[in-house]
Structures are given as C-alpha cells and as structure tokens.
Amino acid sequence: MIWFAICTLRRSQALVRSVFVVIPALLLAVPICTAQAMQKGISVDLPVTSSAVSIPDADREGALIVSITEDGSVYFGTNPTSPSALRETVQSRLSNQTEKTLYIKADARTRYANVLKVLGAVRTVGVEPTLLTAQPDSSEAGTVMPPKGFDVLLGPPSASDSIVLELLNSGQRTPTLKINNGPIAWANLQTDLRQLLHNRSEKMILIKADGLLPFAQVVEVMDACNSTGAKVVLITPGL
Image (cartoon, rainbow, N blue to C red; front, side, top):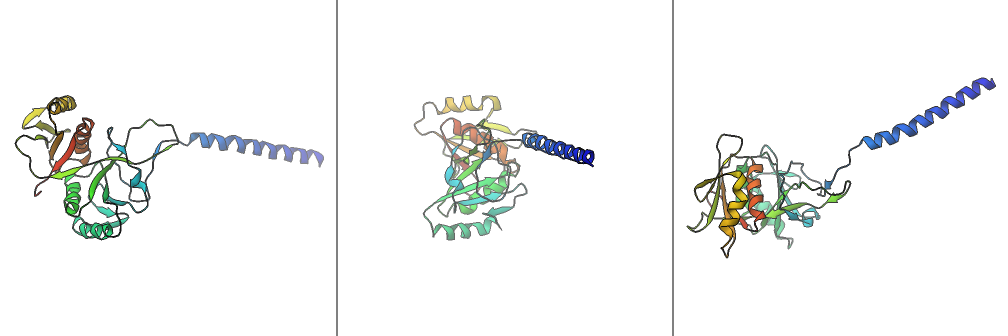
C-alpha cells in the first residue's frame, strides 16, 4: 500500500514538471512582432512605404476612416457603402465635428481605379485625404506603432511647366514610367526627380496612373516623390 502511494506521488510530480516545461516552450514558440495601432475596423493589406509620417490621430475614436478591400468593396468605418453614397455620409459626419481629415485604408492589391472612385466622391466635401500605409520598421519587438501615412492632393490636368509623372500599364510585372513624356527607369526615379526639383521654388509632382494598376505600384511612386520633399498631386479624369 505504501509502495503504491509513493509511485502515485512520483507520477504526479513528473506530470507537474512536464506541464511547467511545456508551457514556457509554447510561449516561446509564439512569434512576437511589431504591431501597428489602429482602431477596430476592416482588415486590409496596406502598401508599404518608407517616407510616411506618424499619424496618431488615425487611431483616435471618431476618426473618419474609409477602407477599400482587394475586390474594391468600400467601407465607412465598418459599414459597407459605395463611392456614390460615401459623399453624403462623410458630409453628414463633418457637420458634427471639426476634424476634416479622411483616412483611407486601401488594400495594396486593389486596382488604383477603386481608390480614385473614393477620392473623386469626397473631393468636393471639404475633407483632406490621407493615405495610410504599412511601414518596414525595425522597432523593438512587442511595441505598438502608431499608424503612418501621407497627405495627397487632387488636381486638374497639368500646366505646361509642371512635372508630370506617368505610370502606364505595360502588361509586364512593372508599369512603364515617364516624366514629362520621357521614359525613365525605376532605378533612376528618385535621382531624376531630385534633379528636376532642384531649382524650383514650388516642389510639386503631378501623378497620372493607369486605373488598372495595383494600388501598391502607384503608392511606390508616390513614396518616391514624397521622399524628395515634393507635394504629390493625383491627376484623375474629370478633375
């Protein structure tokens, strides 16, 4: 009887030791990553940029956030909507608050045309559109990063002396780039832009892109322009 009790006790002790060994091992197996703070909403894969700035107000309660998913579906907050209905929705919200910024979360894979529809719908409401982007930050593991992004302007077709950067659908993996109708290599984009902007008092670059292109490719060019310190103006048909 005593021998049976001793064996039972030893088995219990061994089980407890195994539990305390397994639990830490499982905890160590969970990846720890840097998270980007954002209020609860629609999940999208944001395009990655390197020149965006911190925008903590995008995570503020009551912030005006529009999400565009890969298939082009549009949400205001978490409510499904359409570009045509979005204008009235945003306008009614603006009447109750002083915040005039509209934060846009667009999936990197959605067509650029889907983003233009949203921008075109709200351009006369009086909001200032800000594109939210993901960042290749190497911050300390486990820390929460504020949202980042950059402002954009919407404009009419360019004047004769403007810097116009075009993205043309080449049918290949990357689009064709042109500056003022002259072809340019992707590798030389930032260098050529800085040279063109060097002696200009107004640093502004107008971007015209094919609506069929993935939004991520347009944002990549916008990011390069933003890194030069220039204002980015998106040219769209009808503006």
